[in-house]
Image (cartoon, rainbow, N blue to C red; front, side):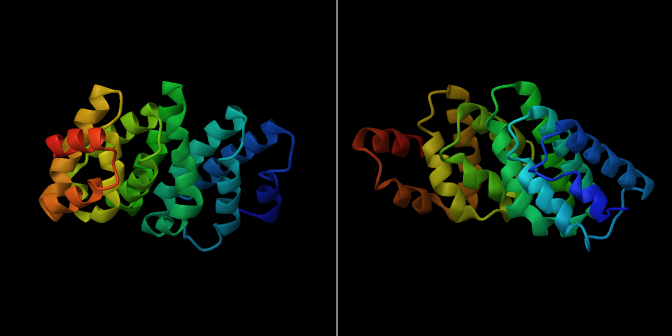
Length: 214
């Protein structure tokens, strides 16, 4: 049962990381005992803790929180989308971590969230963070998105344009190529002009390169 006493163990002001990690494990047990099916009513305080937990500097806390985020998405189902901005987005920022293992531990719950709420809803958030992201983040995003191309039909296409164009100038050829591949897919829905119109503010040299790719 998610009672006030258990929620308090997640307190961001608490200094004992082991208490927080253990609290996440306790919730995992509760979810399993409930057959990985819970109603969304009443999880608000816990989701607020997850939001704050994503800001922790201690990875020993973040790791069990990441796992719990995936379990909560799986157990709650589609209604988990209510917490997309509050909890999913802060979690996604950890895709920029330099350690491949940490990024993998983000991809796992991200995928469970997508299975619960819809791939396209997760993609919308990923594209929103893509423009100013580091190579690690971009690489993980494109790998994940390209494995789920059909979902691109439902994304907010206009919001993908600038991030994708920005990635055409990435130093990493794999990222540039992946961006091109996604652009081809998105262009099939909104056309060439939508992308061309968004190159007006680019530096001449960059613009020339981008137009050539488009």
